[in-house]
Length: 450
Image (tube, rainbow, N blue to C red; front, side):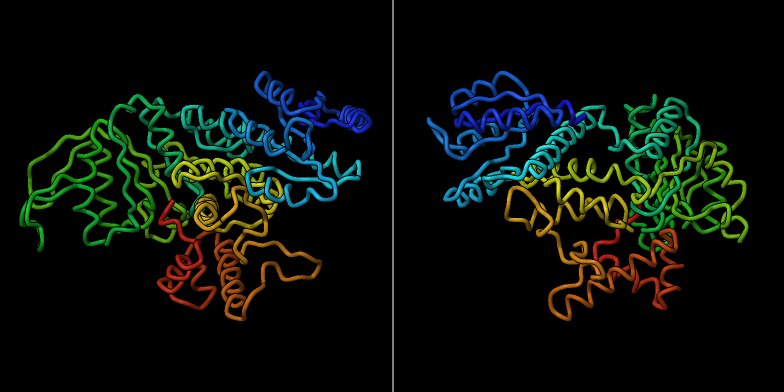
């Protein structure tokens, strides 16, 4: 893709115009050379460019004016500046205003080509994210494993069969559930999500099936359950493996009959609900252990869909990060771009919290990073890659900082080794599940479910 990228060169020195045109053409780029600000503005307004390579000093203006014009475009290019001695400070100012990079004169040919290629790739990435966001709000991802799961989800969407979404915590199970609902014949009906792990066992039955006034202590009025709320639409049961056996038994009956009785009532209520369930547990093993009903298991997993962890879809990390950056830029009403170097760093990290952890990090950067373009040095210490062979990744700062960074890494590794199972991870670490949960919240490893 990048060997067809279009580069606009803005340079007034004839010898340098010729040298840059030849170098970029030999590098596989489509090149146009102009010699002043007015010509650059005309080209930018008349054609979509991937990268602009501009001198800081121009006969009728300066590079900052080129950048300002580029930033007004609906589909802006990456802007890279060429700087001579005495203009470096202006280039740094340009970086603060959103320029992608700058190169000092005289420049190394290979380095210049690498910078242009990297920024052309970034421009194409940004456009790809925009395309995906326009495509019916589809979940973002191009990796084969994720696309395969999404294609299966799209195939079953227009049926009413039960779907079981499986995968580690944070892999986007609720996002895919909503995707199925939007594509279904029930799209005009409600989508109701219930996190079974977040509701105390004593209250889950009433939450799902409703209750009458006085059915239990504290039931001061009658209340419809989530099944009734979801009638005509989709009920998403997240962390379904956390249900107790008695609740499982009642759920099975409702799924079989599409009828229920509220707690404290013998009146039968008919419902029309499509079920999508999700779990990070191995339900087949739970059945073998006697903690999950076999008949309910088969009722829920008519079509099982496995969502891969983020470490198995690394090509999606830059897409997801850029997508989140656009979203948070709107939310916080600020300019927020992720540099190619930062995206490369993010693609190398382990992401035990999967997509949700990446989402939390990008929001953290949106709130804390003072610059419009986020670079690797803006990452929190625990997310920084090692700078030299043999360096323990990310350990820097005070002793307390280093202890926190190390503890976060150990917890992340334990969660990864346990396949996202918090109980197993806590046992392996020799701490309680509650302590593990608190530390996951502290270090941004918790997503509250899917």
